[in-house]
Amino acid sequence: MINPEENPEFLNDFLAYNSTILNKSENTIKEYNYDLAHFLKYISFKYKLTDVKDEEFIKKIKINNFDLKTLEKISLPDIHSFLSYLKTCYNCKPATLARKTASIKVFFKYMCNKTKKIPTNPAQDLETPKIGKRLPKYLTLEESKELLEATASLEGHGNHDNAERNFAMITILLNCGVRLSELVGINISDIDFENNKMNVIGKGDKERTIYLNNACMKAINKYLEVRPRDGVKFNSRDALFLSEQKKRISKRTVQYIVKNELRNAGIEKANTYSVHKLRHTAATLMYKYGNVDIRALQELLGHESISTTEIYTHVDNEQIRNAVENNPLANL
Image 1 (cartoon, helix red, strand yellow):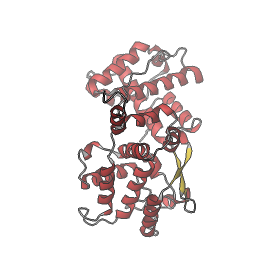
Image 2 (tube, one colour):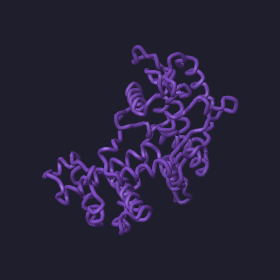
Image 3 (cartoon, rainbow, N blue to C red):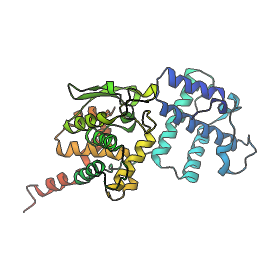
Image 4 (cartoon, rainbow, N blue to C red):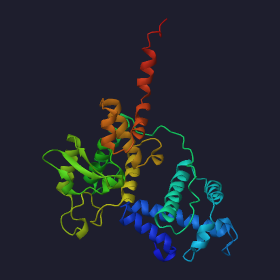
């Protein structure tokens, strides 16, 4: 939760600009606030503008009075020092450092180029930490079937009043590859029941169409038969998936449900899998078994760049093995 009173005015102005003018998502605004507040606290510590003497307590430093004159003094080495501190003290991975680097770059670009509140941009030549490409973790076809079967079953769930809801959510995740934020954001009015499709709002507030197969439509309709109708919170009346409090289900609740269902299914390393792994699973299964064109998969997943989608062309070890074994030189 963002508390504007804890921020300097220029930081609040930056957040407001990104929220209203650039229409950045709520999650992006929170990340900007967290990253930049931490950065300014570190600068206060490095410049000895606080009584805090130990790096361990940097996050407790107050920055609401951080002034523009201090901001003007920040240099590229200061930013490098902050990133080094994050890696040393928090063991931040390259992907995390890259995100924080992006936050700093867009912030100083705004302060220097957009508002001209500072004369020079210390992050102009800031390089993004290199991120090694890793193959996505995903469930196999058999594990996916086991997860669906376990979610549909009442065994091991006890008093499971939300079986239809959970099954519908996991069915959509495994069949459509939607993001967590897209899943919780689905409204009933977004679904075209006649043509078996729905609209979702993805990254950058971009809308796209997802086509629903028979499994998805069957699961959704079965859930709608038991979905609460009375006592639903006013601003959640159109929400497809509801929590036990009869309001739009939260991302944290979905994450908990997925972890729990993975454990119930006896999936090995269930604790290491997340909702996003089900998105990887859907993409991998569609590419491996659906003969889907990479461009079509890009559109379905809502990837801005084809390079993001191309990672799924490298996960099918069976195809790679067959390619090698079918080499015309294999039997010479």
